[in-house]
Amino acid sequence: MVRFTKEDILRLAEEQHVKFVRLQFTDILGILKNVAIPVSQLERALANEIMFDGSSIEGFTRIEESDMNLRPDYNTYTTFPWRNGGRGSVARLICDVYLPNNEPFPGDPRYVLKQVLAEAESLGFNVMVGPECEFFLFRRDPEGRPIPITHDEAGYFDLGPVDKGEDSRRDIVLALEEMGFEVETSHHEVAQGQHEIDFKYDDALTAADQVATFKFVTRIVASNHDLHATFMPKPLFGVCGSGMHTNISLFTAGGQNAFYDPEMPFQLSQVCRWFIGGMLAHAPGYTLITNPLVNSYKRLVPGYEAPCYISWSAQNRSALIRIPSSRGKGTRVELRSPDPACNPYLAFAAVIAAGLDGIRNKIEPPESLNRNIYTMSPEARAAAGVANLPGSLAEAIDAFERDEVIKAALGPHIVDLLLEAKHIEWDVYRSQVHSWELDQYLGVF
Ligand code: GLU
Ligand code: MG
Image (cartoon, rainbow, N blue to C red):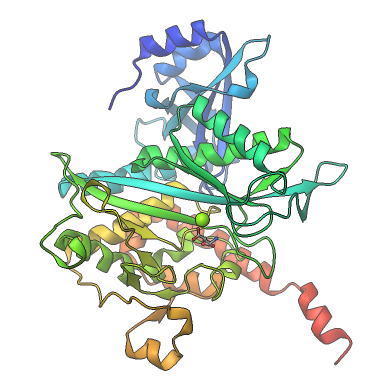
């Protein structure tokens, strides 16, 4: 869909008194990077003439490829609502990264997602994604550094005055709407200081752009309220962590929901069943991508509404994949494992590649389990064929290394760099002495 032409952008930039344009892209970890240009360079940028030195960016490290070319996606043009004071405003464009020889850069996560979406299209499907991002708001110390103390004592769906985050959450929603998001709901989550903002589903590429933008907008607006927004998956022991439930549906070129079939069990089509089959079969393999940190695995434990077993269910929230109740156009699968620390481009690419593999190889899912899996004994789980998700970053690295489908979807450039970074992260972590160990052992042994 074309939202903006080059002429539209030049005209809008003039009308909106834009002084600077930020050309954005993400590194391998999903962190948004910027190259800022004065508006006088906008026409050159729109003609794909802007180069930058990528050699110091995570995942962009091959010295011989240090000169990179940014090619703006015109549809992503928007201005930052917090920068429209007297001195002109700031706009942004999300870019694809190219090599000087005009080839797409294989380390660009957006390119990886586009490749997987092209594959879906070759099978006749457009992929829609609706992410649900949770996050915490924490206080900051006098130097502005975040401290793990939440700003309120509210709980699920509570309202002010207990919910002191309500003001910041409202400002985040308003900023997102000004930037073109269609925010559907926002509410206080289960834990103190925890929030969720859900925006309308969109094609998978737009949804990934929106997650990257959402995280950056949330951090800025929270900091304007002197709070720190974090997408760390499990910042506090003993309470829920933050997930990024990911709703996925496939549409045919004719606009039909390919997951819906009123004649089938649960009204889920054969395509949907195979997609679920692929998502379950490759769940161990893509968990490194959907749950990329040491800390991600502190969230994936029983008792906090986060999944830890590989199963699907038409109802139960303890399952890895849940089927929300709406049917017809709204038929979709909800993957409950991803957390908001993931790189949304790579996470969507890996999960969609898993589902497409299910369709291609007609992978039938096991029976749907409509009971609380947390309360099943290990024997009962084994009898029902329910395996565990990786329990640590080390297990996730192992499973990823063994999954050729997921690795092929990401491509060798990203696979190599990611594995190198994740092995280092795990080695550094496991050789640390943590405060829990001192509490438990120092006095006793
Ligand atoms: N915070 C929970 C998680 O870690 C999810 C809660 C919910 O169902 O929205 O996934
Ligand atoms: Mg939630």
